[in-house]
Length: 176
Length: 381
Image (cartoon, rainbow over all chains, first blue to last red; front, side, top):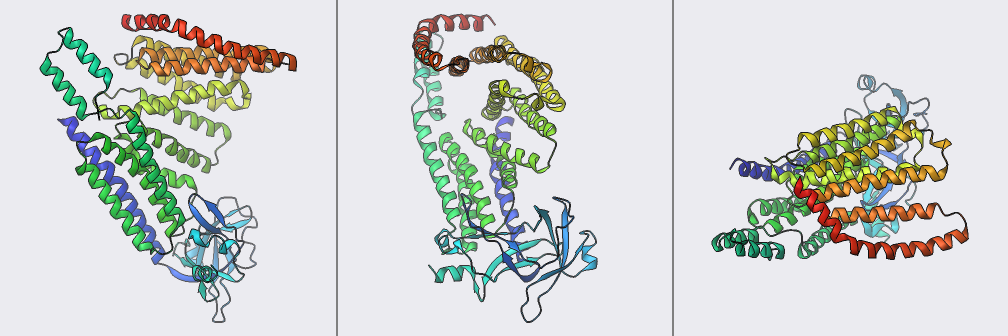
C-alpha cells in the first residue's frame, strides 16, 4: 500500500515538476524581457546559422572604439558604462570600463559581458527568425540596430532588430 | 496486447505438473494480460510513432512559424502539456503501454519547450545549460518509466549536459577526466543497488548499470591506443576508487546478485584495473607492438568474457551472446592489426573469412554444451 502511494506521488511529481519549472522559467524570462530600459545599439558581423534549434542571426554589438577587451581576463565579467544616444540618433557608445560590483554607483547605464577572443559579448547576440526568411536574411543591410532591454545589473535582453524604420521581419517579409 | 507465449507455455507446464490449479492459472493469465509486456514488436513500432511525432514537434518549433504569435505558441504549448499530463495521470492509469508512451513523449516535448522559449525570447546560452535544465526537470519522468527507454533517453542527454558543465569550469585535463570517470562510476554504483523496496526504479537503475559497464568496455577497447598522459594521478585514483567501491557494493548486495554474477563482474573490474595499471606504470614504450597488442587483447577477452558470464548468471543470455560477438570481432581486429605486408593481408583476409565460418559453425555446435554448463553453475549457486 505504501509502495503504491509512493508510486502515485512519484507520478504526480514527475508531471508537475517539469511543468512548473518550465512555466516559472518562461515567466521569469518574460518579466526580464519586459522590464529594464529600452535602448538601441548598432550591430555588426552577421553569420546566419541553420541548426536543429532553428534559424538565427549571430552578430555583435558595436559600442564604439573603446578597447573593451584590452587586458581583459578571459571569461571574467567585464562591465562598461554607455552613453545614451542623443536626439540626432547616434547609437549608444561605451565611454569607460568599470568594476562590475561598483558599476551601478559609477554610471547610469551599465552593460555586463565577457571577453572571448578579444570580442565583448553580452550573451544576447542571437536573433531567431522564421525559416521562410532564411533566403532573404543571408545578408542584412548595414546600419541595422538591435533593440535591447538593459537591466539594472547590466544584463541585456534582445527584443528586436531594426533596419532603419522597419523591424527585420517586416524588412524580410517585403523582400520574400 | 497478448500474453507472452513463453508465459502461456510455462503456465501450461505448471498446470500439467499440478503446481498451479486452473483458477490460479486464469488469474495469472488475466494479470499478465493487464500488465502486458512492453517489450515487443508492437511497442517498438508505437515508440517509433511517438518518437516521430516528438521530433516533428521539435522541427516545427525550429521552423519558427511567423503567422502564430509568440503568446499563442506558448499558450498552446502549455495547454497541450497540461492535457498530456492529465491524460497520463488520470486518463490512461490502467493502460501501462499508453502511459509509458505518453511519458516518453513528454520527455521529448519538454526539450521542444525549452527550444521554443529560447527561440521566442532570443536566448543565447551554451547547449549544456539546456541539457542540464532538461535533465533536472525530466529526472522523475525517466525514473518512473516502466521500460528502459526512459533511462536510455535520459542518461546520455543528461550526461552530455553534465560533461558540458564540467568543460565550462575549464578544469585541468586530469581533473576533467577524473570527474567524468567518477560520474560514470556513480551511475554504475547507483545501478548496483537493488532498491527492492522501490521496484519501479528497476528499469532506470538497470540502464545506468548497463551504461557504466558499456563505458568500461569502451575503455578496454580504447586503452591500447591511449597515451600514458591519459592516466594521470587523479584519473588513476578516481578509476581505481570507482572499481573498488563498485565491487564492494556488489558484495554488500550479495543476496540479490548470484555468486557467478559477482565473480564475473569482479574479474571484469580486475582486468580493467590491470589495464589502467599498465598504462599508468608500465613501460609500454619498451615493449614491442606485438606484445603490447597481445596483452591488451588478452585482458579485453578475459574481462569481456567474465562480464558475459556475469550477465548469463543474471539471466541475460542475449547480453552474453552479444559480448561473445564483441570478443570475436576484437580477435579479428587483432589479427588484422598484426598483418604486415600485402601478401600477408591477402592471406589474412581469406583466413578471416574462413575463421568467421568456422566460428559460426563452432558456436552452433558448442552452444548447447556451454549453456548447459553455465546453467549448471547458475543452479549450483
